[in-house]
Image 1 (cartoon, rainbow, N blue to C red):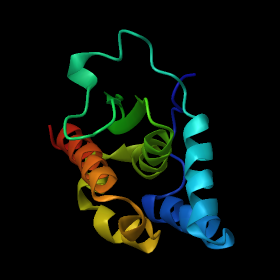
Image 2: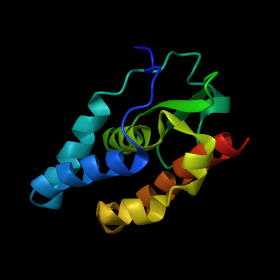
Image 3: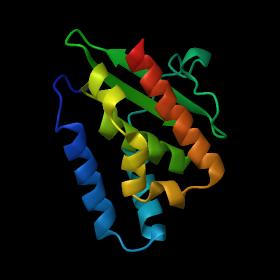
Image 4: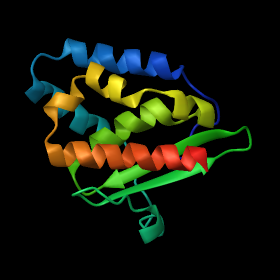
Length: 144
């Protein structure tokens, strides 16, 4: 599956859509299921993309992120993990960050965004550290 060629909603609109989805769901068991379902929609990475260079350090699970900066300056991200919940977290990050310019990525307050979704308090320390490592990687790619 190829990445879209045009940006979708703004990053704030993408966050609002995610917040609406989470708001509809009752407890965190339902929200976890939704996060896992989001991860099921990720396009798989090829074996060559599951390289050491694409691996995200600092995650307890195996995580790979691929970034692609297009001619229009927008970044498109793809990722995969061997853990279902982490695949879902990757899907959330892709919805927020893919199709954005470097300045948008770097200016976005991801900590406040994840807190507004309730993810900060719902994840284990290990998962939170992994999520931070994924965000750091996206931000580094955008800053490069």
